Length: 427
Image 1: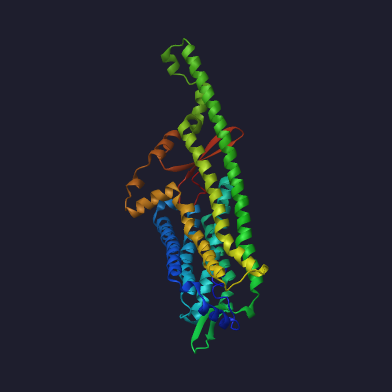
Image 2: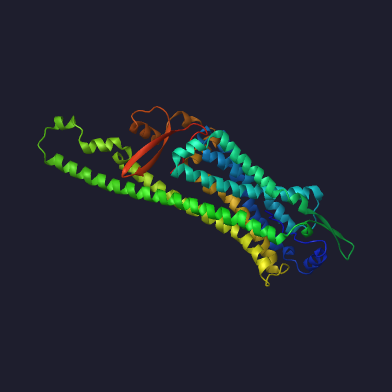
């Protein structure tokens, strides 16, 4: 997608008029406007650079985080990292500096990499959404389908398709020389509108890079949220029924006249059911599962809303530009609106690490181990893992649990933490 097209959206014919208008009253000549935009662009750049760099480093160095989801998150971080490196400040410079000084080839390369990183980021968001859907709704199928080899092929296909989608930028963009009346020559990196239909291209971008991804993410994340919500309600009902059954059993024990040592050597039917179901026998763990699932539902809603709100302004401005007669590209409002719509789009790449990585307990733990160079936590199982080992009858290796409820029966599935071999998610 062309994130800088509007900033230098001039053909050779109308570039002189644009520059003359800039020389009359150009809002970015105001020092306070420059300081404001440099400050907010710097904030977004830091989010994109440091947040995604940490994700790449932690996922690469921490064996704890070598799973399917984190493999996709690492590639998402690479794409968003490229957005920060190649898009943010370069976009700002188009408004602060009038001349393009890097030559024709770098003009083409800049717009190609900008489009590549932005497109790959959106495609990977859709892949992550699809993988989570299969992992939670069809966990067995997910484990069979998403083999390590197929994972590499999926990511390879994402980057290849993103490159092919962005390849026309090499042919559409070039440097344009504009000769001023005062004898000065200005050089722009601008699209050649005679080579393509810009309105059609922006509509295609709107459909393939906004409407379709938003629709897919909304549908799949809604199904995930509904499944988690239903299973949570069923688990809550079972917890309440189990609590009532336990109270009745205790009342019967207190009123009975059986001998204590005889009762101590017997296991009642209610106790047997509780032992068969570790979640129900441990109310605190069950409540943690319920809270975690509700937290996941809230996070899914935030993910969809963030993508929709961060990418909408850019596309809305494009549609306003083409379909409204009130749009004036050279007035002060449009001059300020254009970089702000780009900035909000870049902000999505900066906030992705917060939504997909830093909110994960396992990721935060891995990040502490890497940053503090502490491997003590890897050698000693955490308190949570010790409880899980005890519940499973002395299993001696770490495992993550997924609980599913079906036909009023709760089951606990053990998924061993082998790199890139399971469809596990932190619920």
